[in-house]
Image 1: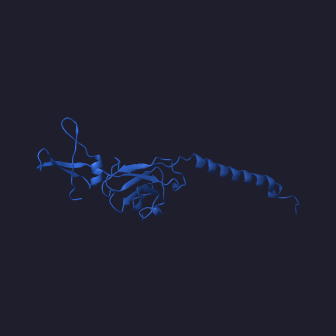
Image 2: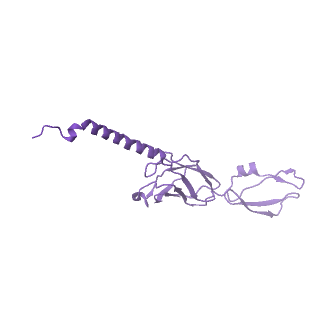
Image 3: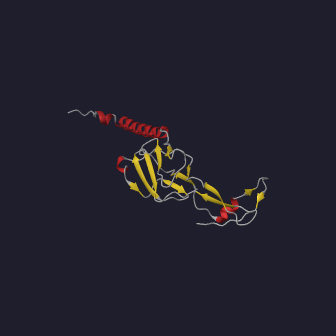
Length: 196
């Protein structure tokens, strides 16, 4: 029987040092990989023009998978986007890199909205979201849809009917409406609001 120590017994410190170096190298490689991985970018793809109507859905596309396949196709009451002014609705991951929001009610008329994706959102591989500007969109602005002249009730007066694309506050209208004559002088007026 031989009394010489075996290979592992003779080289235990060398093997232990090799294992420690290998573990450190693997950890360092993971850190470098995570730092080298580009951040995830989000893009609002719908509406393409920034204008939404009634109950249009919003759609974001991400540059990486944000959820696993198990999260795809499930409607949720809460999601990674906040709205100002607030808008309640449902979120759906249509695929791992595409998020859809459908409002519960029609978007408020004549309103600009800001949608902000949560900075804490991470991809399925735990990549961070790139710092992005908030997404802005709006509902169509108030428009005058028609102007018609009616019969004047007093000499030297005129009666105009103004129709708008949405309800108008009489106080707001009074602050913004100016009528000028042919000489560009501002003309005094009074109005009554019907159907308000």
